[in-house]
Amino acid sequence: MTNPYTLEGRTALVTGGAQGIGAAIAQGLVEAGARVFVCDRNAEIGEATAKDLGAEFVAADVTDSASIDAAVEHVVATAGSLDVAVNNAGIVHNHPSEDLSDEDWRRVMSVNLDGVFYSCRAEGRRMLAQGSGSIINTGSMSGHIANRPQPQSAYNAAKAAVVHLTKSLAGEWSHRGVRVNSVSPGYVGTELTKRGMNNEEWRTAWIEGTPMGRVAEPREIAPAVTFLASDASSFCTGTDLVVDGGYTVW
Ligand code: NAI
Image (tube, rainbow, N blue to C red; front, top):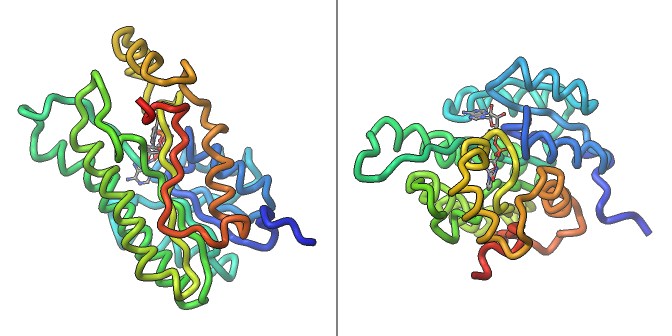
């Protein structure tokens, strides 16, 4: 019997793949046998990560739809198909909402929501044309709960929207062979959480709020994505797989 978890012969794209959770996801997909394209706006780190992992690099800024369209075209022109796409690029901005500027609200929305839609649209067009594919969006437990004590309303709203965008696209595309799911991590030790981990009040609240009593390492998120990318999840679509050490049970 063939291994349903294998990604042998598949081509994958990971946005925000240069570092943190995205780099760990790219590594997991490589280990499962996929040909992986690390996609990031940071070419310097992205190239180095791709080289380390035995992957390839393609530059894109997901806030610019022409840029992600071109990255998808590059993957298809180079590898002949796009079978797995992980839309993971994201940023956070912590600021009290009553003083949040239009620019900062838009900046978070443009990466975390517009960027996920532009990426899904470009990938979905290709996958619908070939009649198969698996898209996995990086949501967050912040799409289900509002984090504390740090203020981040734009981030939380964008992540809730990513979970619902995922369901909406699954409803549109699944009967044409394209599955769309999301993975929602809890706190993970990366550049994005560095500021909070260096703040005693935030770090204590995060760890005490997590039944497992710790934050995750990026490699603990990757297998959930590999599962959703593979045939092991062939009947999963529109689902959100929460990987949060139990944070959302309280
Ligand atoms: P990170 O800051 O370590 O990595 C984010 C990557 O995205 C970087 O390589 C960055 O260059 C890239 N990126 C940012 N804006 C981009 C753009 N416009 N176009 C292309 N690439 C862009 O962050 P981390 O922690 O690895 O986060 C990855 C994803 O996981 C994000 O969507 C984040 O919201 C989500 N997440 C993170 C959690 C955490 O605790 N670290 C928890 C839940 C979700």
